[in-house]
Image (cartoon, rainbow, N blue to C red; front, top):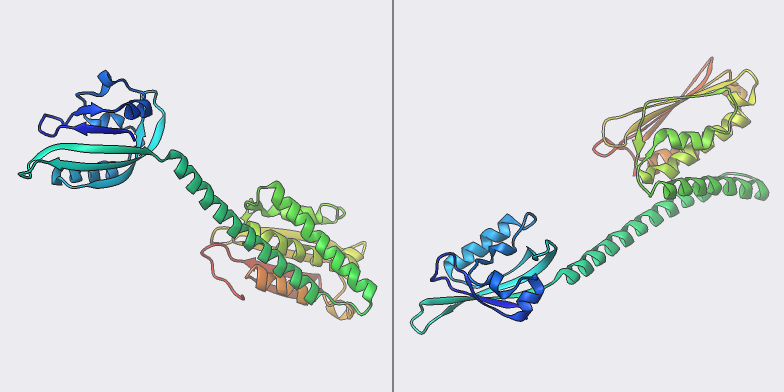
Length: 309
């Protein structure tokens, strides 16, 4: 075990003995350490609070066992599990301090890896639960009287989920620009679609639900709405809301059949409302007018107000 003995009866409490293990650990020779205070092992990254605690223990002549970042002669660092104990004579007078050092650098790395692995497993579990919740919503909220149509509807929605998953993986499961998510669903639409909005970033966990909402809105626009008519138009605009990642998205169809002319159009209400309220924790409003349909979605960000579970 690396160890040194210091003499507090001398000025600066210098090292008076250092064993070979200490010299091997720090890279210094005996001539370079004897007569010096141990503070030469400290550096820019050494905690001032830890240094103060060691000094207080030395002044109080009490034991201290503490972890400190030390520096070798070549400038490299190591985490030192430092133990300092006072040595008294039979009368209780302080003679020396004995200090042992244990290099715990590798142990700290293992601890850090374990902590990272634990956080990763929690994140994977959280993502898996979120995806399963979305899939559950797809299966539960999809509607079709015909088994083949039902199967096709499920498959299309799961494909959208998979595309959004790929987008998330490509971005390292970090927040993504709202425009990127919108364009993934609408870029293949024709030139009657207009997109506009400032840069807005949304949380990774909101990407898949939003992608499904956009898919549902587009499917209904193509089947029963504005994009089913040559004169129809679609405009999608977005803006940021208070709170990190909060946004408002407006889906405006013009030249679309009126609500009365679309009796078979359920507009995927259950699916869209379920994704917005339960997954995005947001609000959705639909406004029918002579010019068509406007859907407004508001999703809170971190620190914003929320609605739903």
